[in-house]
Length: 259
Image (cartoon, rainbow, N blue to C red; front, side):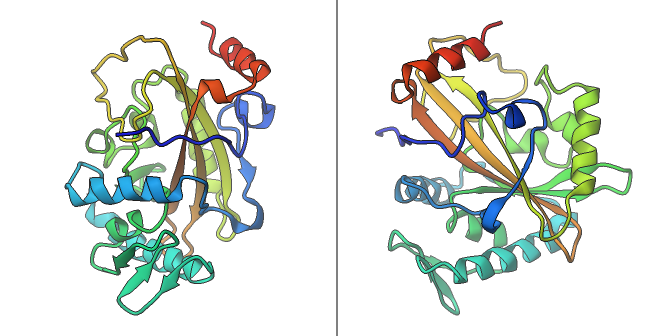
């Protein structure tokens, strides 16, 4: 399979001090928490393939079902305002011409075939934390949904060494502070030897050191769902060959990743 690669990024997070420091968030401009980019058709075909093959890209806890239904209605309403989509009673026509059946009984799987973003639902657990209550995660970046479902942010980020108790507290305060109608975004990045979009890795599996050839970045948005109070966490994945960066950008990226 040919790699699905971008040639541009919406930001260079290692060069932007606003994004480089965890959690590094900015307001979403123009309500653009769902984006469509240059590889839309190719990424959507890969999402279709994974979902049709029953790959482990979906999970849902009972306490997240109401939030999933609210997300379904919110995303469909947003896509109905996009001239690239045709939202009908029982199906939706994507900008790439693919027709997707609308199934409110399976909201996240349906949305996973309509937008490039992976969708994760963070729901309050009544103990001052948010847990991952449900998700459609076609493009995991070195983690698995099965290991993270039902856990709070601290446990979700095992074994990320930078994610200490201080960062965990700051992120929880951030989740608590997200306001309806005022989404925020951040962007991360990492280096990979392979361009695979579906890149699961269990917590105990060591990351194999290899020469990196690709930059993988995620534009992540957080939105408060006004009815259920859950937080929708969206992940838009970009993969770019390092050779598509300028020499100065590559040099700065290498400097940022020096031990």
